[in-house]
Length: 187
Image (cartoon, rainbow, N blue to C red; front, side):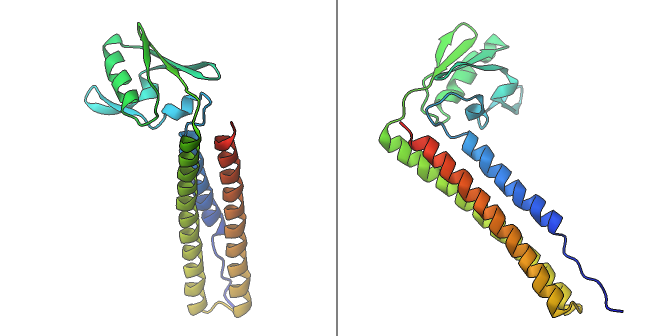
C-alpha cells in the first residue's frame, strides 16, 4: 500500500495569518488624522532600568476624534513620556496639564498623506514577502515528500492547496492595504 503524504497547511495558514496580523499592527501605528490609542503602541521608554511600553505608564484615552490624552500615573515620568512622544516621529506636539499629557492630532497635509500611503505600501510589501517565504517553505515540504515517494497527483494537489492559500492571503492583504490607503488619503 502506498504511503500517505500530507503537508501541514494549517501551520502554513497560521504563519500567513501571523504576517497579516503584523501588518495590521503596523497599520494601526500609522497616524491617519484620527485619534487612536494604538498610534502610541510603538513608543517605549527606558524607565526603572528597562524598556517599558507607554501604555504601561498611564491611562490612554481618546476623548474626542482629534485628541488623545495620557494620564501618567507617576508624575516623575511625565517629562520622560513627553520627550518620548516628541522624539517618536509621530509629528504630534504634546501639551502638559499636570500629570495629563494631551496630544492634539493635527490635520494631515497632502504630502504627509502620500508619505503615509507609501509607508503603508512598504508594510504591505514586507507582509507579501513573508507570505511568499511561507509559500516557499510549503513547496519545499512538497519537494521533499516527492523525493520520499509522493505521487505526482498528490504533489499537484498539495501544490495547488499551498498556492490557493497564498493567493487568498495576498488578496486579503491587498484589500487591507487598499482600505488603509483610502483612509489615509481621505480629506
